[in-house]
Amino acid sequence: MFSDRATVQVEAGRGGDGSMAFRREKYVPRGGPAGGDGGSGGDVVLVASESLRDLTALRFNPHVRAPAGRAGEGSSKTGANGPDLEVPVPVGTQVFTEDGTLVCDLAHPGARVVITRGGRGGAGNIRFATATRQAPRMAGVGEDGEARTLELRLKLIADAALLGFPNVGKSSLLRRISNATPKVADYPFTTIEPVLGIVESPDGHQLTVVDVPGLLEGASEGVGLGHEFLAHLERARLLLHVVSLELDLDAARNGFSVIFGELAAHGHGLAERQRLVILNKLDLLAPDDRGTYLDAFAAAIADSRLAADEGVVRDDGGRPVVLGVSCATGEGIDRLVAALHRYAPAREAHNDPDDGLADYLVYRPGIGGSDRFRLLRAEGGYRITGIDDVAVGLDPDDPADAAALNAALDERGVLAALRRAGAATGDEVRIGEAVLIYGAEDRR
Ligand SMILES: Nc1nc2c(ncn2[C@@H]2O[C@H](COP(=O)(O)OP(=O)(O)OP(=O)(O)O)[C@@H](O)[C@H]2O)c(=O)[nH]1
Ligand SMILES: [Mg+2]
Image (cartoon, rainbow, N blue to C red):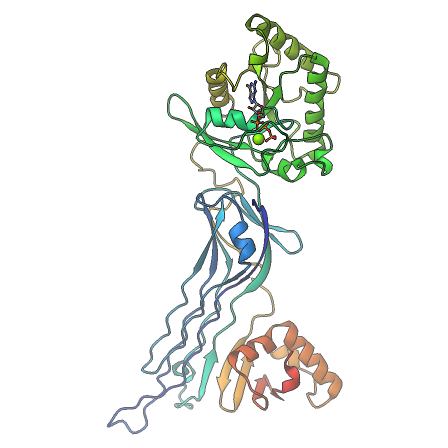
């Protein structure tokens, strides 16, 4: 199974609560406050890992939660921070919000994106001491960690991608030129999921080549398997268009045009992408006829009125290059590997900071938002700061106002935060001047 999509619910760790504690020493009758701050909750961090092939692991574990911070303790001890939770994803994973906005693209190995921030720890009661309030009975409650639903989509990253009709010998070719060993058989759709191989040049440079399921006419609209996999060609710099030798040249050319039509229909620049034409199964022709056939095929595709040769790699004379090979005998394979390295030269190590791809990124959708609030644990209940405006002008004893207030608090996440902080029915909740009573009907 190969999964190139997963929907995940990510939740960063909640901050630890601040402590409400006092010094107790033998000869200090009324020690001052000594409650330390809570630690912050762990972030959730996506990390692009070369050891993952696809998103299957996340599909089966779509809930990702970072550990909470520890509560502060007496003797002014700060609680430990919750450790960050690192979630490995395959290189080439793109992250989208639920409404389809691209958040980041983890296209480089080792790229890291902080996808949700842990909540801040609550302040210990030491921080509430003032000249007139020397024994504060109040401590901050840890903030909730950020939570969101994200859609992950994998688009494989390879230097070159094989494409063509089923059964033309794409997998046989990958076996010949790389370390990969995809299944080869004499029926269409032997390959049902992408396979990556590493091709080494004689001078030691390495390239990655991806083999995808064969394409059919209509693939871009969902015929066969090709539709889902066309997306995995998008990030290849060079396409390797494999054609199987057919004695009828017209049929061979038409097939070539059909595949081009699917690339063009898919879009994303596939039609214009550099494309190297490979004619496989050359062993089916008598040795003397091979050169003539290759020339005739090159002329036929250049002559096509369907622009199917757009993007095709050409020789110095402007004629399409058609590399004849036989995966059965190995003929032409060395030339093909050389051409591969020539037209898809090894990428320089990633060093372009402006390519829009994440190396280290902190995703902050809520920054500057008005919904930040702090929850304090106070004697008799809780105090909420930072959102005094929600209660202004509303009378909690009036049912309509109370309902509006309830909805506003729910929307800003205050009710959820109170619930998580352990609020019980009857607890007082103060917002600015307003005093509310936390009730069971608040629970959902
Ligand atoms: N005679 C001959 N047969 C070949 C050659 N290359 C591949 N074949 C045969 O062609 C058939 C299909 O080969 P595959 O490599 O599985 O083809 P594919 O394009 O990966 O096929 P799908 O995965 O179904 O899209 C197998 O029976 C291979 O043995 C070749 O150079 N000469
Ligand atoms: Mg195959």
